[in-house]
Length: 160
Image (tube, rainbow, N blue to C red; front, side):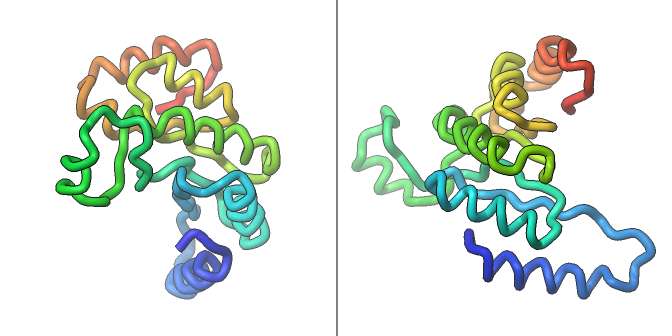
């Protein structure tokens, strides 16, 4: 699903459904951290050409590199999407590369492995306009929101 043809088909279906509405919702596409840099730039380029509002960088990963869990246990668990801290470095790197390419042509939402206000700042420094949290909120609870707001206040805009 991480290719221009699928994206174009999806956007066309969405726009056909929305065409008679007075106000349409913005379109954001969440991309995988498993894309290489060239593939991520291709998705950003496709998003720009299709007038998509922005990208969420990034979704869950299938990569299990660097996990402490034994391989046999991972194989027993299965190959579903992995979220949380293992995504942080890769998703932040892709975010930075997409920002270099897209500049202000796309709204970028930094996601993946945000467990602290400093993590959120790293996403903003890499080019995110907003941040999105899931797993960090599950493990850290509401205190994470306060930490993010406190640490990101220097940016002069709300990130949540």
